Image 1: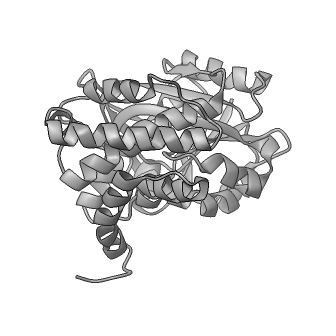
Image 2: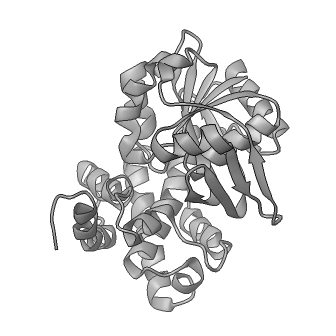
Length: 311
């Protein structure tokens, strides 16, 4: 397949590396120091096995220099999706489609509104990876698993072709029965973990062990499940327990990307994670007191990172 990775962070960079290693025609759309590193040195990945792999890759800043591709893997932050949808138009031909991989539940609808629903699949990814530096990624835990599917529930040949590409590259991949349930399930996990971890500035091993912070995790997960149900997505009776089980199986020192961004003073996905829980809860008439409290505690740090306030 001809694949464009738009946004070369930890997830996009790692998956693009795996696909390129498997022989697919992969081009990375990047800018700034990341673009320079990819062009000059290639992409570097530190693996779970303790090796450091470097692979020469194709990297450009201007999507029009690439032209239409089969699939775009969108790896930008959630708050960059709308801007990216406009920038990636040169990559979209009549048969092209985009798979968003960022956290949150709103990317598919944003992309469909900008590019047309026929060009968008729903998607998500489970993995623990860090961007150590420009073009340098460390796989820190959890074997990557990519889940994607047509928004209308059909199993199409294009989805099956991408499934074969991922599995052939050694990446666990799945086309679920209901992609919307899968997206909300991932959102439930990441919004829960990120919110509590960012407020406490503590790793997974700490927040899941202390009774007080574990209670916060359970409360946030319950609120997300209620918002999902009000949005027409029933996650099932075991959804909260499943989220806690995922958190229990994270590396003890594991942290969330939103947490790391906030701790390091960078703009984060706050608005797309706890902010979305609060916003969608208000729209659906669902109370989200714990998520609202956590969001409110983190908002001043987010606004400072974006230059909106100073202190």
